Length: 108
Image (cartoon, rainbow, N blue to C red; front, side):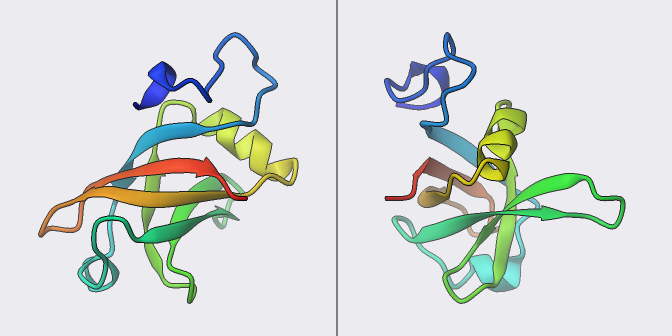
C-alpha cells in the first residue's frame, strides 16, 4: 500500500504523525545509491538549506546522503519531524540510475 491508501496514514486527522507511505527518491546521488539495494533501510533527516528552507533527505546509517524525498505530504512530515518524530525509509524499488521508491514509516 502507498500514499493515502495506507491504513497508517489518516488524512482525516491532520495531527497524525503516523506514516506508512511510499515516496519517490528525488535527486539521487549516484555514488551513494549504487551501493544500495532493495530492502535497505535509510534514515529520514530534516535539514535546512542556506535560506533556512526545510528539506527531507534519505541518508545511510553512516550519514551519506542518498537522495531527497518527493512526496505530496512533505509539509506534514516536516512538521512531525520538527515535533520530534523520527522516520525510516525502506527501499522498495531502485533503478540503475539511482532513482526509485521507498516506504517511509515511523522509526520504532
